[in-house]
Length: 320
Length: 128
View 1 (tube, each protein chain N blue to C red):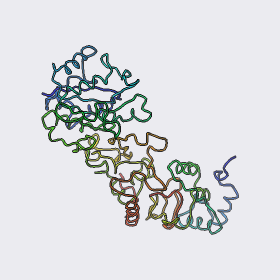
View 2: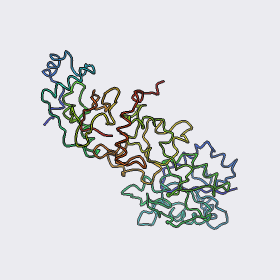
View 3: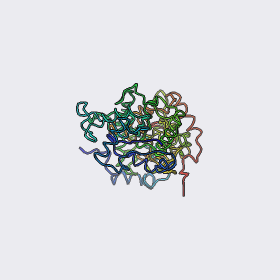
View 4: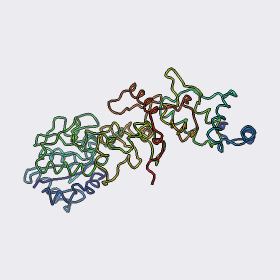
């Protein structure tokens, strides 16, 4: 039996909604098959007010062993570093977060807000938000760069806006069943099992990427979304086209550009006008290249690919 | 003051197309459109090659200018896009490598242009 407590800070509840849609395993499977005891969760907990406060206080005191502390949403520091804009059970949430993190064996940050600040931390960041151990790309965050939970692991970051439900439940199962030692984390503390490949890996538009045929308007089923519509699939670490959403689709499969929501800079360019759904270029050449590709190589590749492109690459091949 | 380039095709322009080709650009086939474009340049058409859109906002402003134009406003499309019948610049940029160019259809797929093009042509909306 592993006790799990889930709290929300500066959040939209999107990650909770995502979690409740999990299938492999489902949220119910966590309880029935994998021995996770959900002490409290904002959308599932029956307790209210002082009853919740009692649970949280017992976790901090050790009266209840806290195996896994899950946090969703940003840690809010405004105004003036007090955190008073986000109070929970009579105190700033940021204070609960610090004490619960110190008491837990494992701390798991779910979604961009909890991992590195996400949309609330976008400039000018009015709520003075940060993630548990990062603020965007900078390590530190609410718990500090050196924080490790009792298990010895730093915060396990599962980013996304929202995180895919199965990323969440599979990591919780690994932790709850004593297989946390199998987890390896990347430089942003994301489990490598999910975040080593790219969103582009498994994308059904890869052949259009290869032959440099662009989607030029939303809804087109031919073409690659990278060249014109701002898709960040080639530089975003996620398994969105390997572990499909709702088991059968993904943004790019549905014709929607990847927004790069598993990377610390999300939302990119601080949502400045003209930067969303538009590939940023300088004199016609993309500013953000596919990872590991330089400008010179990209230009050479383009010339070769366009020259070799077959006729079918220009057609809508997904005809019903 | 209204931008004359964006005014719809005048009756005189329409008649000129009809006299020369028997139809207007909106009705023209691929080959006739190519001929119309080449004839305009042979007749001395100068397009707005510069300034080049260095940023996406500048690029977007050109698209905003092009978007309201009808298929008959071929001349205006060519002027605003800075169309040329030859490669451009030291790097010899040309349609062939442009992201919007369909090499087999020999067609510019940028919705705001949507025109036939030869591989060695170029315009300032070029991107890769």
